[in-house]
Length: 236
Image 1 (cartoon, one colour):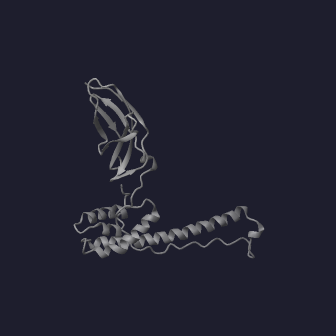
Image 2 (cartoon, rainbow, N blue to C red):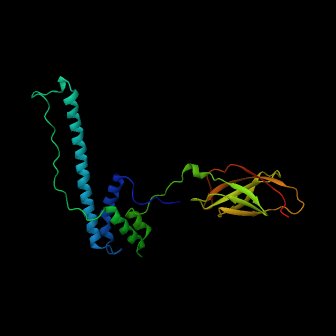
Image 3 (cartoon, rainbow, N blue to C red):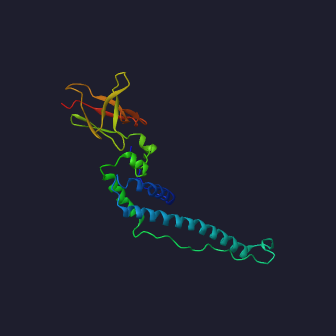
């Protein structure tokens, strides 16, 4: 199954990732030959991120208070007044002194660092999980569970076309009209699979009903395709 990219899409996810990475990367300095400059970069990025996020929370609270004050100013009632009269203008958060920042965009830099880490001889999946640089399994969309099987006869071959996507292979079943119902015709990993025309010279034409089902590893997966009817005659 495919993996999502290790870097989250949302800002909260990126902050969580950076917190984890910064808290652990120094522990791999020797094992993975992490340059001290990268560890320093990570520390600065995390500290600056925390400062910005804290200010953002306070700024949102300031905006909420200012909006409330504005609503009272334009559309308030006498009940909104205080003993001194109109409510005082809200106090806003001071800017404060930000910590030292980095000299390059954070994830432009750390994406290259992650690539170097994964190419290091001592790297393992356990390290990747610890540093959160292995993406989670990406679920297959429900509509992709059902294969679309296309069948046509060309010369002495019956051609089966299907989209492989994230799956291992496909089981192709055929009802040959002999009373046995659907039986396994073939399993293939080839999305352009050919099956030899089984009719010999003089045999009557046949009509088959065919359908397919994906497999993941050795396990059948998802729904059967829609039934496809194919008619063919001897190619000789």
